[in-house]
Amino acid sequence: MQRDTHDLMWGGLLALLGVAVAAYAAMHYDLGTPRRMGPGFFPVGLGVVLAGLGVSIAVSAWWRTARQNPFAWRETLAISVALLGFGLMLDRIGIVVTTLATVLIASSVAPHKGLVWRLVLAAAITALTWAIFILALKMPIPVWPRGL
Image (tube, rainbow, N blue to C red; front, top):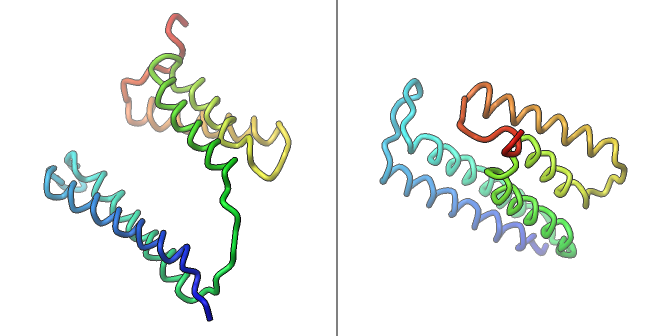
């Protein structure tokens, strides 16, 4: 049996990256407590989650036979453009318009075609993002484009 070395390698890399992020954050930032989280609490948590996901990918790949899948260039490009666009647009046009635009960009290459489900998805994610970051966390992020 030829193992799925592609997923095994990338799962191991994700696990190592997660451990490195968690270790760096734990050594350089105060963790605090669950009640009073310090600046290192969130990056350590994300590093541990990333390491766990990497291990689960690698372990499942160990028992799976290899299969050749073509690299998803269109999907990779769409996600990269959406992430880059989010970073560049957030301060200029606000979280509402930025989230709508980036969800529409990222979902443009989804296998399921159609505009209605993409608009519903964009509206739901935008509402959730607004509720979490503006209402609940009260982050000082512009909500709408400047001048509105």
